Length: 318
Image (cartoon, rainbow, N blue to C red):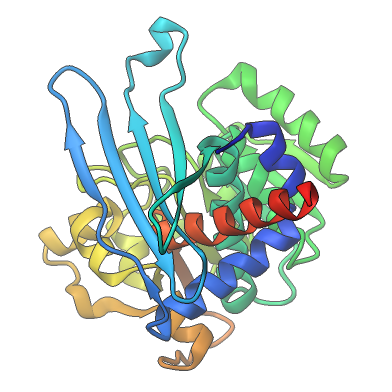
């Protein structure tokens, strides 16, 4: 059995490749050529919340199950808040083929997913990328979005002020793009044509009324019914695209809460991203319309990337 480390994942899975894999995963799912059951959640009182996420792409050799664990108390024990592993099985025999460390794979495929949405939905002439968050996901999103848009500037805001300055300097160097720390959420929103929210916030990060006409927003941080990064006003005024309707209306607080408030209903979701990619759905919007892509992560993205990684390692060993 293979044991694939975080470093090996980063070495094997480039952002350009991950974007292609994410696009294929969404396409195959929309065509009915992939199995992506609803995630199973188990919450232990006083302990971790655990998420079990199986998926299979028809015709591929493998079936994958990601097990993610979340515990906000872990940092006090010098442990990560979120931990995950992906177990890869032979789809015929059921034999366990590999255990893949999940943090880097999840980070890369999430940013790749947003890049696919950005490529389809965002204007071609976007210049300024606004980031909320200064962690690994925010960093990965700069790398991924640079694959699909020629951004000239990044503006970033984080509540962790000490981290913010260092993050901006690091992105400037690593991504070779001017990156400036912002002293308020409002500054980020007012300056940006393209926004990414990649935080652990449970409440809206900014006033939706401030978002520029014609902007595109990728909201990826909140994936629980009681948590959201964007407010009802932004959801209402946006052309709303999701990774999964079923998951969105049951799990994503950015959408669950406005539905609960009766500000929108489920039909406000215009399409799933995969439906747009294969032409099952279409949207007509002007250059002044705001587009919002809300995602919480689909197991089929993990399965596609995991199958690729295992195949590459096996080819190298021949």
